Amino acid sequence: MYIREIELREIRLPLVHFFETSFGRTTERRILLARIIDKDGAEGWGECTAGEGPFYSDEWTAGAWATLKEFLAPMVVGRAVESAGRVTSLMKPVRGHRMAKATIETACWEVEAKQAGVPLWKHLGGVQTEIPCGVSIGIQDTPEALLEKIDRELEAGYQRIKIKIKPGWDVNIIERVRRSFPDIRLMGDANSAYTLSDVPLFRQLDRFDLMMLEQPLAHNDIFDHAELQKQIKTPVCLDESIHSGEDARHAIALGSCRIINVKLGRVGGHAEAKRVERVCRENNIPVWCGGMLESGVGRAHNIAMATLPGFTLPGDVSASSRYWAEDIIEPPVTVTAQGTIVVPEKPGLGFGVNMSRIDSLTVRKERIVRKSCPSENDRSSIFQ
Ligand code: OSB
Ligand code: MG
Image (cartoon, rainbow, N blue to C red):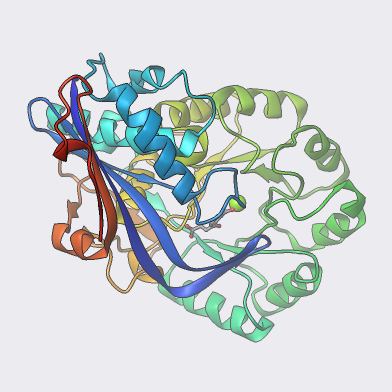
């Protein structure tokens, strides 16, 4: 594989409904997309999963733009690499910035899958042709609004409900949800809003038969989570704390979690996600695919990843229409009445990219081509 060109774009995409977590509310996404063109013309797309601000992680859209444009893209254009799984090694001089790196790395996997003429999920080693889906429901203005949303998602067929919690919107809310929906598969995601001093609160949650409690403690902790897991029955699931297969191995060895959420951006791309999946599978730790309010490009990558054999629990990958009035891929992602996504059979991501839609949403665009032959135009940035 030889990367001839990278095109970066920032698009703005309003959510159909705000999404609120313990760290804030999002109403409109600022999403970076990368289009990678190989020397034989094969094209692949990647999406940066960084948020609008450095709150879920230390990466954010405008920061990732600068990192990609000034460092990462110039490190890979004009370079030959033996496989998509090796692309990250070209970006090794840059520490961290996994979401920015994953933007390029995941796009390269699509290029490679297209060159091989196979769907990306098969190219990754996926085995499942239909993946189970859950939904992540943000903090709402009222408990009634939350109950109504849950009702609607169950009606649509989703197999498990995740609700966001934060201090003041936790035990009381979960109790109400359980009273209304005694038998559903239910879980909570705290996005690091608590500390070990909250153990008594987590013990109260043990009554509600939650499938798991996601990232209750600090975003960079695995030690205190092990202490917490010893003191509660509910399985702890780690999200923010896991950046690599090595992190997963350490967390499992420490007993910090019984389940792991895998996100492509957070771990730096498909190759590292495969390592996390493998460590977990070898240790009988179930994994599932998390979400970052992705547009269709990121969503399609998530679907491909979630076909790997270790992904045994419903993920946060759901229908495009829950997020967007109109997605940027065709067809949009849809979910069956049984709450599953049927994986596509076409080569690459298996979804078409709606170029005119993307063009109309683009607020800036940059082409990065081989360093040794830049013309003025090649390196200009277009602000619209
Ligand atoms: O913690 O899983 C999370 C969204 C943004 C940032 C962090 C998280 C989430 C979600 C949404 O839970 C999942 C989705 O529907 O894409
Ligand atoms: Mg989470």
